[in-house]
Length: 533
Image (cartoon, rainbow, N blue to C red; front, side, top):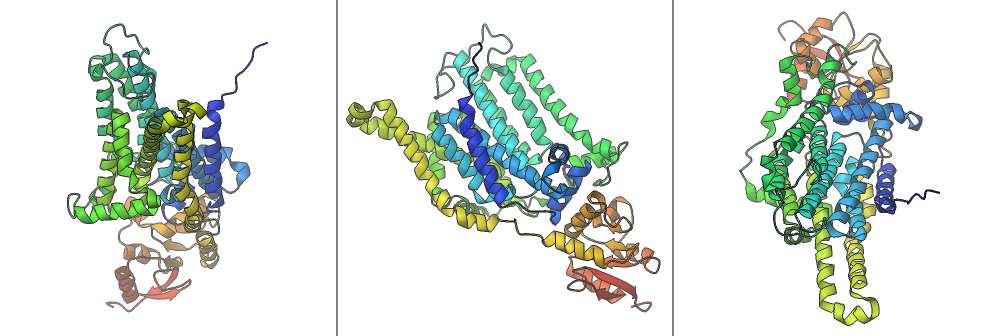
């Protein structure tokens, strides 16, 4: 009879993942939303294309989830639920990452739960957003690189996957795979999939490159391995990005952003050219930016924030190559995010939050080891040195988790979207009040739930929804050109966000508010005012 061993090592990551999923599920948005969330809730089920950089990996998984998760609710809710799953996955893998670094399951649990309950990460798990999947790919990437480092140093005669080790990798007697090459190739493939999720992962490239060279300086001589890694990265990236031209061209989706079926249009979306002017004065006003970063750290970590630099120091002493990898990555991401001015930038700090929790766990292990070495000779007769260290490590993990546990109710109240039906209610109201065969000239935040209602739910197919992006892609001209082309032939409605636009419209047309403030909410364009006005 063949006995099957239960993989007990998977239990702690699984339990943390379940807890993280539960936390996100409690606060989960029940339906459709405004802004980018509404867009992703639409392009996922439709297998469409999203705004730059297209997020094809996220869209492909969103489409798969919209099929697999059908029993759990409407398509928008399924996309929200997918983000809860992503947050849970990231928390679970974090447990294994920290366990590999510290040889402590308790500290892994600390970091996994801490990550999931940090406000920015918790919030990102409550609604459709590509950053949650980006976080998953980054933590998996770190775990694979760590596994590769452990195998290289082991084969070099160093440590067995832990500690700092000494000496360099052996250059003789190596065959394919005997240094864990598969881990590095897998990391390259994961990086490619991550690139199809969010371009922020490009900021990790210098850190990953230096880490690889620090672990194995002779890797430049292993041309086959380097070529295999490059191929894995290129193939993974190309396969997911094919979704853009295919779904914008021969297999056109009901919702396509831009013109990614053309050469220039593809690169416009894939490279995020629309947002290239959003990086403003990166080297300017550094004291203010550092102050903002310190305040953000306090908001996210509370009293643990001052320990984060100490965590880096502890990591640098115990795992210098991992410290190089994550330290440089954190600096580059924070430097970029501090100068990037576009929409909600807090979520750009997801990976620095992950890195900080791992550093805190390493710091806890270093502190516990120091205490065990210092006082172990007094307690050894009662418990033994190994057990003393394990007890102290568990106590350190519990102690570091206390601030997060105490802040959890307040954080839940801040991130809770479970009662938010504002977008769904507004959409219902707008669709009910617009006349048949109407044209609505909208802007992004309101266009996305309208697209969801029409193209996913099949409501009001008679409406023509013209977003500012639609005007650009279809060559429809200025806002007034669209209105003038339809006024008198079809009912025309507008929703604008720019006060100057509203003033110009009020001077040119007779406007009738349908829902809220004229121009800024659903407004009927009744007629053109007198000629020359």
